[in-house]
Length: 109
Picture 1 (cartoon, rainbow, N blue to C red):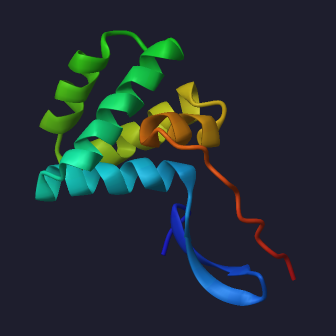
Picture 2 (picture 1 turned 30 degrees about the vertical axis):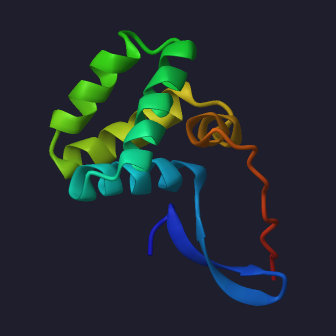
Picture 3 (picture 1 turned 135 degrees about the vertical axis):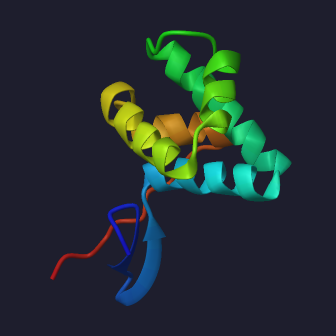
């Protein structure tokens, strides 16, 4: 497990959880490895969101560059731009998924 995909206590039970950035990473791998059209759309919308946040270029050019990179390079790139351009991870992922995001509160012990 890592910071994007891990085990947490939710409602008293151990659950697998995914970070907001992890949602985008998972969409990338599903789009790249399986040509999943839903995930490709999520990535297009993620790129559109980045442009709205001031990332240089067009969403189309960002998407094309993203899909041409090797997986390790892409993972590092997504982590970097998420840190630099995404202020509200829930808003970003909500936009990309075209859904409102609900948080699950992790319990601390």
